[in-house]
Length: 400
Image (cartoon, rainbow, N blue to C red; front, side):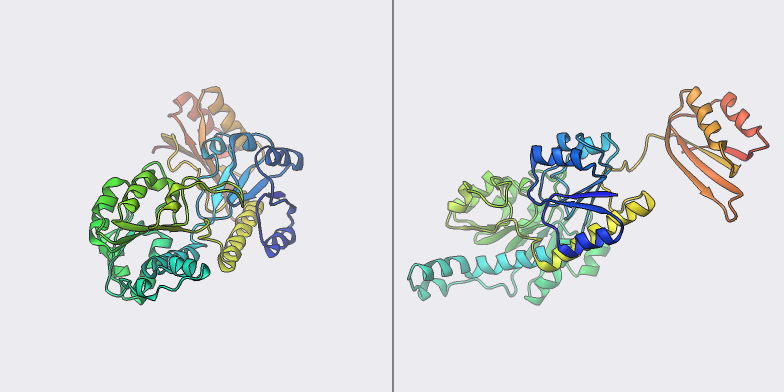
C-alpha cells in the first residue's frame, strides 16, 4: 500500500507505517497543483494531510481510496467529491483535545492579566505597574462553553481547578451528561453568553454551526467579558466580533480567524488584531509534541487497519442511512459463483445493491449474505434463487 504524506508528520509515524508494510512518500511542502501531480505520479492509495487543502482536482488526479486528516476536523477536504468517488475520509478526533484546551486557558489568563500588553511594554522599555495591576481574576467567575465535545469537556476540569463554575450549550449535551460533568445547561449560545464572564467556543464546523456565534451572542455578553475562539473561524461572525471589541464591551483572543494565511508563514492583514482589545495566536491549538504524537499514532492505526481489513476507522463521509428499502437474506453453501448468480438476477431486474455483507460460518461450508436493495425484488427474481436447492439453504426478504 502506497501512502503519500503531504504535511509535517513525525519520524516515528513514518517508520511505523513502513514497518506495517506501507511504501511511504513524504513531502511536507506539497500544495495545490504540485500535490495533485504527486498523487498521480506516486500512485498513492492513501493521502495524509494536516492543514493542506484537498481539492476536487487532487482527489480526481490519481487512484486514492483513503484520505486521512491528521487532526480533529476535515473542513479542508472536499468531502462531496471524495464521497462521489468512493474515497474514504477519516480523521483523528479527540487526540488534540488537551492541547487545545490548554491553549484556550492560556488565552483566558493572558486576556485577564493582559500578559501580551505587559510584555509589549517591557520590550519597549516601559514600566506601568499601576495600569497592569488591574485585573478581574478568574476565581468565582463563570466560564461559558459553546460546544461540549471532547475539547469542551477538557475545559471543565481546568475551569474547576481555577474555581470557575461552568455553564454550557451544545446540541449533543443532555442533562445526564451535564450532571456527570458538574456543569449547568443553557438553552442556546445567547443564554450562555448572558450567563458568563468568559465565553469559549468549541464547535466543529458544520452547515448548522457556520456563523452561529453572531451579533446576538456578542450583545448578550456581559460588559468586560472575555471571548475565546480556538475552534474554527467560520463559526463566528468576525465582523460582529470586531464591532464588539472596538466598542470596548468585550476583549477577545483568537487562534483562528478569517484572514488566516494558508501557508506556514506569510503576511497577516486581519483588522481585528489592530484593536487594543484583541490578541491572537497562529492556529497552534493542536501543535504540541504530545498532541502530534497522539495524532500520528492514530493516523498509523487508521491506515494499518484499512490495509488489513479494507475498513477505515473514524470515517466521516459514509452515508448514515443508505437508500435501501429491503434486505434480502440469502443463507447459502459457501461455493464459487453462488452469490454471482444472485447478483446477476438482481441486475437483470434493474435492482441496485446498496450494501452487502457475507458472513462465513466455522468450517467454511455455509454462509449468510445480507444484501441491501433499493427496491423489493419481484417473485420472478426471488423464487429462482430460493428454488436452487443445490446452492441455497434459505432465502428471506425483509422490508427495512
